[in-house]
Amino acid sequence: MSEKPISPLRQRMLEDMNMRRLVPDTQREYIRAVKRLATFLGRSPDTATPEELRAFQLHLTENGAQPPSINATVTALRFFFKVTLDRPETTRHLVFVYEPRKLPRVLSPEEVLRLLEAAPGPKHKAALSVAYGAGLRAMEVVALKICDIDSKRMMLRVDQGKGRKDRHAMLSPQLLELLRDWWRIAHPQVWMFPGRDRINPMTTRQLNRVCHMAAGRAGLPNWVAPHTLRHSFATHLLEQNIDIRVIQVLLGHSKLDTTARYTQVATNIIREVMSPLDRLTPLVPKKDEPPA
Image (tube, rainbow, N blue to C red; front, side, top):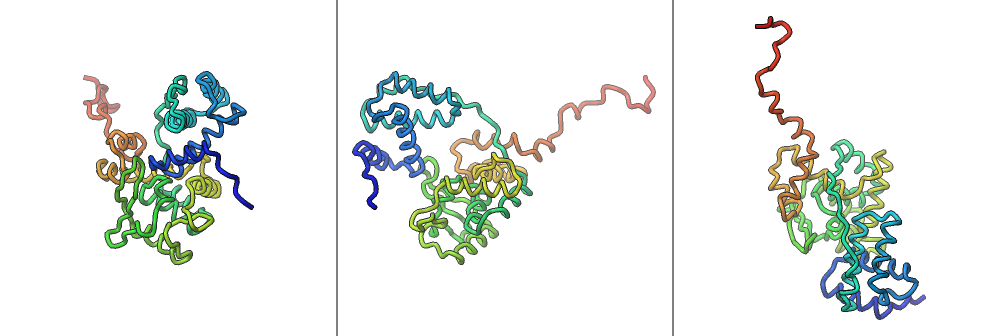
């Protein structure tokens, strides 16, 4: 059976995204956003008016879409109308929604171990171990290639991570053994974690599904996701008294402020800090001391 032909409009948008080297996950998200607009309109998305785009965002809000989802949709539609259609004025009523800054949720080391042991197979256990053991994002885990494993220097090369930046991540001896075990089983050729067709890498969506499955098996909360392992990586390093600037480099953060938020969830650090109240001379006499 022949595949459904791609419309000229979608083809142009794909070409525009490829020219700007948007990563595959971003491209899929942009395409999904434009398709949702077309479904809302009941016709081709390039016919939308500014008022209809405003109505679409209102529709998303009234149907319970969260700020991250709304903002991702706004970004995608601005790209579609500004770049592909050359009609930037059409999106003038689309607005970004304020996202409250929440503390990252983390797992304890014992919970991480339960999660990894509950992974459905050696590939998935190795992939989730990379997220925790090296602090990689989901998109960086699935993009890992065989040639990125540097066992001599004990490093992982992160090729074109977030922000199109290359960096090195740590490769622990235990993580190296997990990766070698998986390689001995499947002998992947290019991608460390190939997808079902064994030609392309597994997708972040597949990694998310596997993580949720493992969390369910381990009796962990349903908010656990691959990024939770990255949060846990950073928090556990802080609790081991690793310099925050080293953690910043390992995570690939441009700003130290982004890394510093993990100090708010590193419970060992909080517990070890002495309150200034405890340094004061007692204001009341002890029970066994007579009043002056």
